[in-house]
Length: 275
Image 1 (spheres, helix red, strand yellow):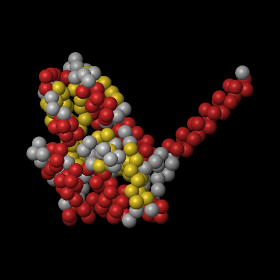
Image 2 (cartoon, helix red, strand yellow):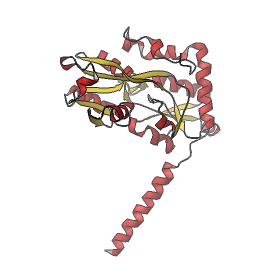
Image 3 (cartoon, one colour):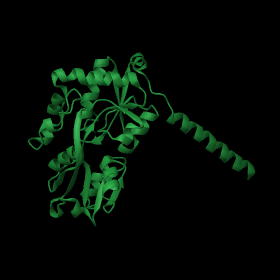
Image 4 (cartoon, helix red, strand yellow):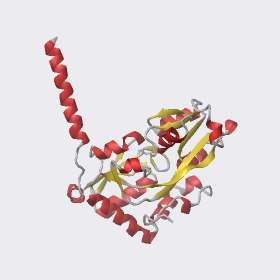
């Protein structure tokens, strides 16, 4: 029994050391990425139209369009890695990816653990619910179940500002929207750009609250202190403004989804400048 106990303790120690080493893994700098010939970017795979896998197994979406340009201009191949909202920070701190482009809203808390580049999108929170029981105000949510994804600004905002609203939390966006479809929750909150797109593609649901909380920005993120990669992204965002790149990105990936429901100037940020 003592030998077994000692073995278990040894295994725990080894796992702890391995986990610690992984958590402290150093990200590759720009020269190392160029030398390897590959840029690794984390994106969503289930968050249409921003990052998703299509019927042919290919990544598509607004973030993916930008990711491809970053690799192209750097002269390297692109490797896309699927991430979920709760593990975006961990994928950077453990150096599993070089960059996160997964609808990552800039917040002071996140900026303490990762470095954000210049923004390329504007966003607020929205709430979508069934037309038969439409939620149009915070008051309507009290006593109801609100579906959110873990690790998102929706979870943070409602926890801090509306503790009386019951939150039903899931790890992935697919799970959250499925929970709304099958009636496990009364409404769902995430970025307003996402719920607007989802409601357009799912008749019977409407975004009753189109803007909640403050107007935030979405930006690429890198591991804390990875200055060379951060500088490359910032230089790219500023240079791409000359060709109105993110408006072209919108036309290619979002326009067919939103139609006239969204003014692209209310979403797109060019050159990292918020007007």
